[in-house]
Length: 507
Image (cartoon, rainbow, N blue to C red; front, side, top):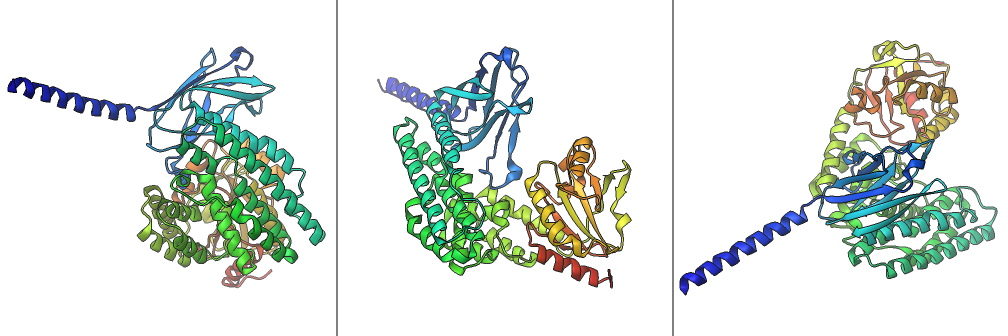
């Protein structure tokens, strides 16, 4: 009997271990997605999907992973994603066909997903239905986003909230009241969608932060009015404070996985700092210290990461020196625990070391004449380097500012040149971009990274250029003396003027 009991115990133990191993295997199984484009014979130009995700929730853009699943001859597709043991944002879209994408939408993946998608083409737009394990959260994400993008955004266009000056105090009151009424209406609609969804409660919490972004929209629209109506800033400030408690979404454990929410939270804090001091920009050290004091854990780490990865936030900082950034990075590396954010900060510190007081990296590009262009051809000159690509709104915005506020004072100075570096992979696209005069000028030295190379060019790799415009000012000795992410025309003019004075130049 004792032997029998011993055997039973061993069997039970083996079954328990086996069950545990089986459960672990199930848990680590890749997430599965499949689907079909209905009536594919009418839309065979769609050959593949574009699927992307960022394991670090977009805090470090360089971590983004992209997949290109094929669509077969019957319109079927399938792909797998890793189980990251947390909800994470994914983008699913089709390739472009005749200038359009049938599908381009964001969702959240999560453990044990087994999703089947049916995509129908309705007047050129992909209408998707879902079934399978995890489908409820896909349906909810889609409903929340469609309500925001289509219904709310359409009604918002009737409210004058552009970056323009209002006529008077009464006009501003009307705009503010129209805005808050619209947001309150759609906040209620969002609550209803969340209430009646069958998605798990924790996923509802995540989607509440990331989709239907009315709280972000509130602070963004207030910021536009604040920046363009200096005379009425107190009125805007008072109105904002009156409603902010109602609209503010306090961060929780779920919000740390929501990149749009966190960027919005960073922008909201920046707006509040501007309002407190009645200014149009914020000192980066002050912003960093405020984030460090008000938040903790993963939310704090990701907000610190956003300081260095979000162009929208970086553009609102007052001009800062490389030494101040180095000091912040050194301090942040002592407190940040989130691996992806820590990696980003280490990368930024490494980039800074390549910029501060260093010689410009030697490189070769291709000129408009098709011949190699060597930076040594510009020895002894003060050089403003600007990178751009066709379709880049930020690049067009910088060029417009530079042409209006900076270049006229230096265009006749033979010691000053603008080196305009294009990163388009197609030569014809680059040449059309030059001809459009939206991004560059014939007055500049126009070069390209080379056909098919783009951001894989050694210069871009060395300085970890992942976005444009990327700007540098090089003195006559080839030293990097200025590398702003965003800047004012007045500040840039002063930097160029000082660089030219150092070589004794004159107009």
